[in-house]
Image 1 (cartoon, rainbow, N blue to C red):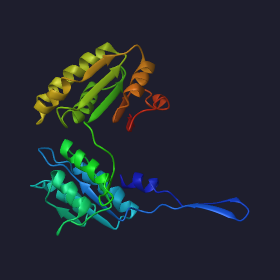
Image 2 (tube, one colour):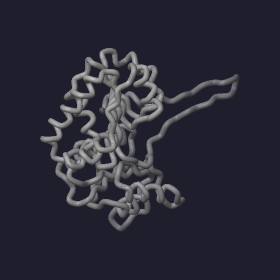
Image 3 (cartoon, rainbow, N blue to C red):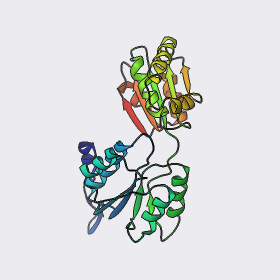
Image 4 (cartoon, helix red, strand yellow):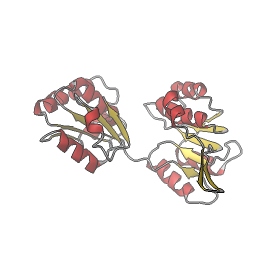
Length: 257
């Protein structure tokens, strides 16, 4: 994670466009950022790592974290590991308001990052519209994953990828696209086996009720459907996964494997 984000840092650009005229582009870190980490039965310590690591690499001078009580030990450890200066035991829309406007204890920040429920998302939207508020990353919607697989994929791995997002919430949506009808059957069986051992099985089952396992004509049609759907997470489990990457135009996170 650190290696990847370090490579993302943009070098300064200094170009003489014509004699005597120079154009420059210089990037500067956001001075202070607030990280919102949801609570609940599944502590999102990975979200701490994914938000705090780039903030630290970018050089943000102030990094503040808010999470609903009681804050899970995993979240506290990840925050310490990433050098987060201040952690506050507060969640929900009130945490977003505190980060945006400041309180006697919670400092005001320039930009707020992190997912949350509908109330958190609405709070972020509102504070981003006010001159005295704070900028935000983006509105966070329900979790999504779309998996493209062929007959060479491992059904248990595909099932795990689907369940990894299905367990996030009952409104999550997971989709499998494959030209292999037998793969659909084997993945469905693997999903049922893994659900039997999943702590958040009931949540995952609710999400699965609105999800789809789809048999396509070929891998090209898988790519076409994926581009129309535009998933939050796209995972490609095919024999020659990277051969499909150039055809992908609409996906937030792509994982060829």
